[in-house]
Amino acid sequence: MTTNAHSPLEKIIDAVTDSYGSGREIDSLESAALPNRRKVVEALHHLEHAIFLGFYTTKRLHQGNLRSSLADHLHAAAEILIEQISRAVVYARNGGPEPEASDVAWSQEAVYAVFAQLPELRELLSLDVRAAYRGDPSANSIEEIVFSYPAVQAITAHRIAHELFVRHVPMIPRILSEHAHSVTGIDIHPGARIGRRFFIDHGTGVVIGETALIGDDVKLYQGVTLGALSFPRDDAGELVRRTKRHPTLEPLVTVYAGATILGGDTVIGANSIIGANTWVTESVAPYTRVTYAAPLNGHVQRHTTRAPPPPHGVE
Image 1 (spheres, helix red, strand yellow):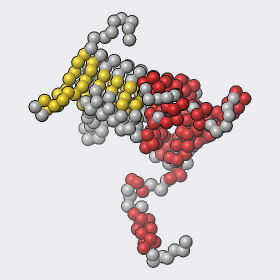
Image 2 (image 1 turned 120 degrees about the vertical axis):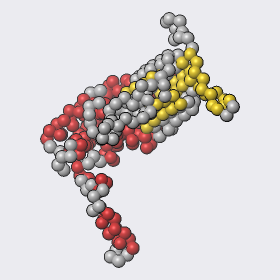
Image 3 (image 1 turned 180 degrees about the horizontal axis):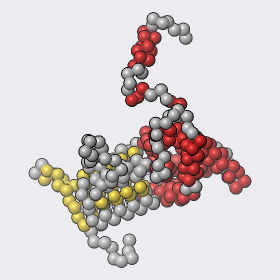
Image 4 (image 1 turned 30 degrees about the vertical axis):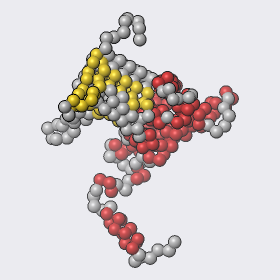
């Protein structure tokens, strides 16, 4: 393709080039020092293969080639993540354009620490998949859930991202979680703490905030928000970060479609049910059902009822 210095496109290119000299925060030209989103996602795919190898591989697996197949994916993921985390560390401290030896060593230590958790993560994800199968009568098999349910993809990415987050790895956990958000419609901040046998049915539009705490055997439906009620600010007017802003869901809670639960002090007691399209900003006791009834005199009525716990030893 030939170019003409006077063509409209060349003038546009000149104008866009000039716009980079305006001092905007998005004008950074230090791309070599920034993490590469595509490479981070590539590492995630390698880890997904390692976790669910039998579902992703294109070759026949057996004990003779299992270790080498896993090694291929884990070596590739480690190499990518060590480099990308090193870049993120440099960027986070506003350092030079290239990682130092200490940055690489710290990144390697973080990656190996996360990888050491992979057997435990596989167990957690196995329980999540089993919870999906037990909780969804339309599911025909475990294989169908792993292959097709967006919640499995989102929860897998989250459990990996969370391990990086708790080790104070900058930027990379959010890249992982936002990638999962973009492909599943499920937005889980990597800081959220999620228990065992977690299931999100359908999934689209679910939002789980950074400081949410979710107990074992919790089930969410589409459109659920576990969000912040307000954002406190300091004397300078800046947002106060790292405070408990999102709710706690105790074990065996079910939250139906479109419900919104807000606030760091809000606790949904164990075995409670939060009905569809409810708005909850206060704690509820265990064994509580919160629902909205039909409008009365033009006003929506919220009903909160508490069922007695089952006899001792009965679930």
